[in-house]
Amino acid sequence: MLLVTLLAALPYVYSLVTPRQAAGAFFNPTENGGSMLDDAGNGLGEPLNVIISGLSSSGVLSEDGFINYAQAIGFSTECLGIHLGGPQSANLGDGNGFVNQTTELRQDFGDPALGTCLESLIGGNHLRLYIQNGPEHNTGALFLAVSQEEDAADSHDIVPDGYDIGRDALVAAALGTTSFGGTTYSTTAQNLTGLLAPGSAGVNHDIATDGITTLLTVTIV
Ligand SMILES: *[C@@H]1O[C@H](CO)[C@@H](O)[C@H](O)[C@H]1NC(C)=O
Ligand SMILES: *[C@@H]1O[C@H](CO)[C@@H](O)[C@H](O)[C@H]1NC(C)=O
Image (tube, rainbow, N blue to C red; front, side, top):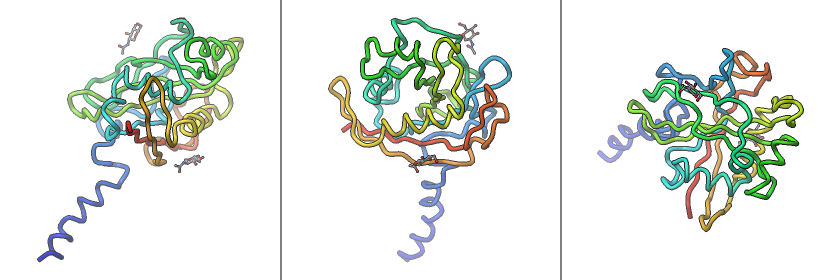
């Protein structure tokens, strides 16, 4: 009897670990008319190459909560509110259709107040945030388009391989224990394939990627 119960539960247990479903961690936008590329306004897009799981602590899964977390891992709001370039939009398949980025953050070089000004001048890591909170798939997951940029003289183009480099640098800074503003975070990572196609099809600036999206689970400790 116990064995029968366990066997009956197996498909459910398995569904918890398959990336395609990932039970509440996020919903794959491509399964409901969305895309894992955002819309840069020229028919191309930036890869959504980092997802913060909807199973993270709820205190991280909002714009304010994310901004505090981002400061713990080396990002801050843009230089003195100065914003270079237009917003990009994304369709996360959650029923909201295309929505503009919630915010855009830059690497702060250790100075949350002024470091992003340096990034604007010399280049560095950069992210756009989209929140999966529409009525059809309200997972709360945060989708990030992360890229390593050239300096302002190059009008903030992405460096060669800049999507993979930006993702890996953000993840390296995020892993383990971090803190900012009195909040301490513990972060784990899992690489997912099959969400983004490897290569450069549809990718802005014609920069190829390895097709990996890294899923972060962030717990406030
Ligand atoms: C995004 O913002 C721009 C500029 O404010 C606006 O023109 C555009 O309609 C917005 N796009 C979406 C999808 O809301
Ligand atoms: C994810 O993939 C990147 C690129 O191959 C690699 O550097 C990183 O170590 C991987 N991370 C995990 C958690 O497997």
